[in-house]
Length: 220
Image (cartoon, rainbow, N blue to C red; front, side, top):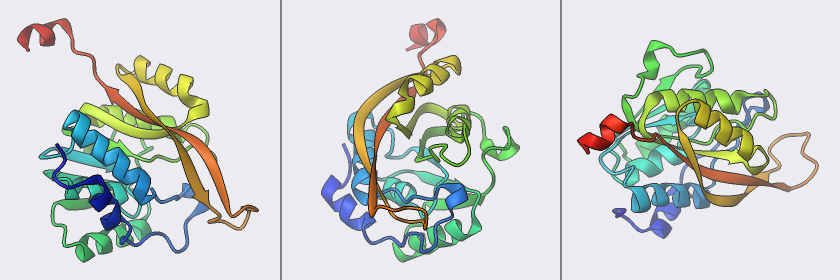
C-alpha cells in the first residue's frame, strides 16, 4: 500500500513551482497535481511499483512525478530532461520539499541509446512525454527509450486518439500495454497561439509491462 493518502499527496504536489515561461517547442505542460497523484497512487497501491524502487522520470520537467514518487517512498528517482531551465525548477522544488532521494540528469532522450540510459537498470519508468504535436513521433521515441530502461514497468500518458498505434508499437518492442484510465487532460492557455482559456484532451494512462518468458515462468 501507499505510505500516504492520495489526497495528501495531491496537496503536497500543489505546492511545487511550475514553468513561468513554458517552451512551446518542447511541449512543456506540467503534470497537474490531481493527475500526478492518481497516477502515482495507482502505481504503488495497485502494483507496488514505487516504494523502495529505482525510478526514472523521463522528461521530468518541474518534477511533479519525480517528487511524488519520492513522497511515496521510492528508493531513488532520477529525472531526465533536455531543458536546463526545467531542471533548475526541478532542483529548487526538491530543495524546498527537503527531498534528498532525487537527482537530475541533463540530456536529450531522443538521441538513440547513450550510456546514461542504463538498459533495464530501473525498476520503473514514469513519464508524461510530449504528445508529438510539434515534433511528430517524439512520443514513440520516449516510449522506446522508457522500455529500454525499465526492467518491470513503464507508466505513461498518451493521447487516446493514438491508442492503437501506441499499443501496437509497444508490442513490437516486447511490451504489453494496459490502459488503466481514460483522462481529460486540461491544458491551460500557456502559449500565445492558444485562443481558448483551456483545452481538454482525451488522454490514456497506460502501464507497459514485459511478459515473462517460458524460462522465467519456470523459475518463478
